[in-house]
Length: 171
Image (cartoon, rainbow, N blue to C red; front, side, top):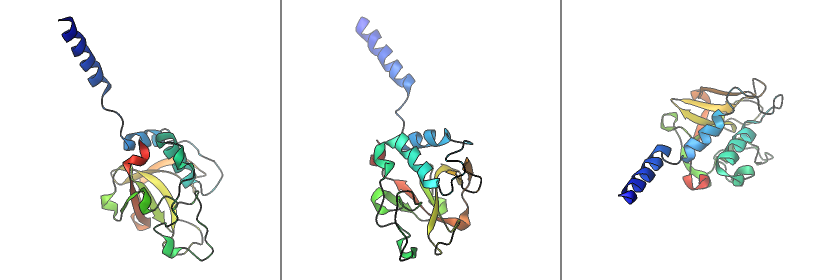
């Protein structure tokens, strides 16, 4: 009888803890901890650095400088454009997961890539990144408001693609 009670209590305590967090949950928990907070205030072009900090906190140090050499916008890049980990397109590659090509297919936790949001880049170049929160919105570190992390609607006219990250990257 004593063993049955102990087993029942153990089962109850496991179910009370709930299932382990998914990669999406981990990423969004970290991202939301930044909501309405400043990140590198006053410094422009920090959207990918913020996104990387979220991914490092949720998924590990491998995201500090991981990048693709074949970004999805490579055909639009100029001859002298450099590929760097701090650029918005640095995680926009097939090696990290599945490319999502329509805004309607975007799910919470996907990385959202926008094109032509600022600067003198060629048309089609990915210039901004954030993390989808669901319901057509994303959380991102804005440049236009001096660096405050906000949740906003994903602008359809600037949507380039999204990345549904391979879950093995965030275990």
